[in-house]
Length: 247
Image (cartoon, rainbow, N blue to C red; front, side):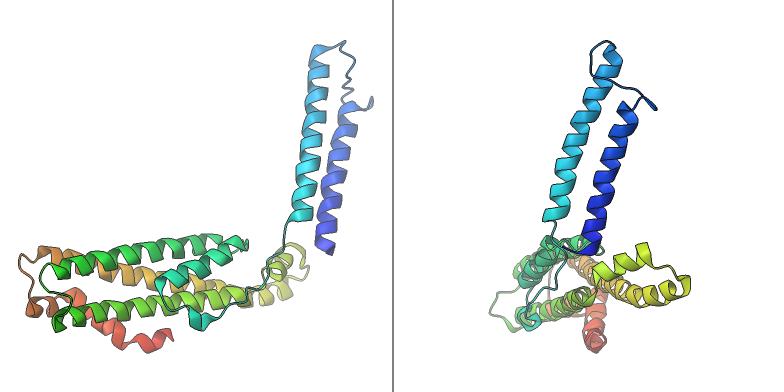
């Protein structure tokens, strides 16, 4: 059993014991269960019941709780939004506390991206058939920007897997030297900064897709020239050209 779990167990059980001593000791609150005083008896029973509940729940939680482990996965296999969602779900199930909200954000982004991609596809099919070169060209453009988002997510997961959460939490709680603490935390904060930046990058992609959907909806008739001239398409093409930055 790890030292930090033993310390937590000792703190929990000693705290429960001290509460009971304070409550029933004649030197302190003098609660009794004799029934002579209704209030005293009620409070005494409540403290005993709560102590038993906290004792059972707290000890079981600490003993059963699994530490965060490195997830073994092939990052080359993460090549679609669906496989990204599965991979992110593994990290959420693995109780990654530091990045819990970031991972939930990524799941939301994946779902939104899939929805927007489908919306754009349906709008294009109103004008083009799936076999037309024009349709294939625009779908290919959307798939390329999707690949950039997938690269962001893969890089984000790679950083999270490299992040030692237990050591990070230990530094926050137990490091005595402020200078050493600051130096070590600066390294871990680089991980956190990257994760935040990756989610922001994907949010920018979602905004560009939103803009494209809006501009497409304004066109009463879809034709190749009009779509190519859209500001949103120009921004998406520019993002794709700069995709090396994401790798």
